[in-house]
Length: 168
Image (cartoon, rainbow, N blue to C red; front, side, top):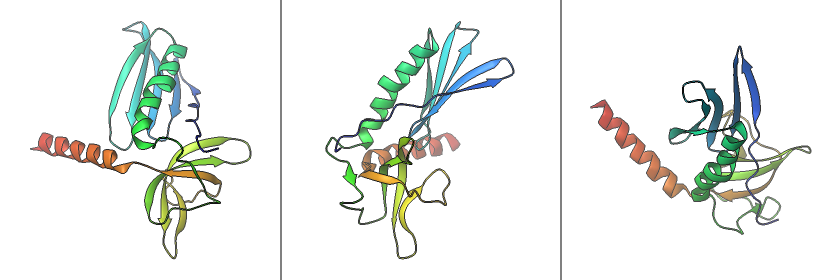
């Protein structure tokens, strides 16, 4: 099981008064689909939580928007952070040797997921940290792989320069 594929996005439908949205989260992005009356089409908004990249696309149907998110955007945007196979490392074989960003494959007995995590290698705190709640640790990690952080840090530095220039 060295080459785990990206897990499919899990969509949920939300009903707010007369507005229906479909939402999903990947390890890096948030996706929201809603009907846009002005365009007469379905709008998918995407937001990348680490770099604040955002944008949107229009589609004829919810299924078409979901397919684009899964097959094009999600796949393309995750590629720079995941090394080519075989990169999945079993926690039984090896753990990270230092504090680092990783992608983890989790299985809780019912559902599997692939998520962003921080590995802590301290005397007091050791394990795969849950980035979402900033306090907990994952206890159901089976496989992990390092994230290619150079591209991520370059993108973050560029975003910081743009933000600083806008503030001047």
